[in-house]
Image (cartoon, rainbow, N blue to C red; front, side, top):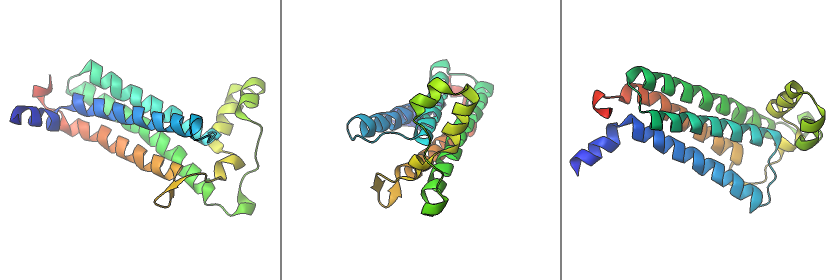
Length: 173
């Protein structure tokens, strides 16, 4: 029993897999709110989902690969970078939600229209800058909006990822 506990505490492979499961949970919640709750995601929400997906793929790759110290360092940094990119998007989203109504960006065309009629660079720019739709707060928990909770999740994922650099033990292999 103690050996299992020590394995859970110190094995970076398990922690990367748990980070992956956290990303799956976040994506599942986004799908639930969209398809069951009827909340359509704005461009920034979709960008955050992409960042969660990329972070989860890094974590899954690390868990499957089970690399040595240098690989754990690379995966740790890569996981932190993808999570911090997502945190940046979430920060912008929270900022837009806290703007005075007269400062909120105008609503643009729907994402489907933009994907079909605009160049890729313009579409990415729109997805990362946000529109007036991004200022709506449709859901809160304990007074915090969904982007605020997503920001917290990204910061936790980045921390988890970076901690694996120092968590690696030769016995992990």
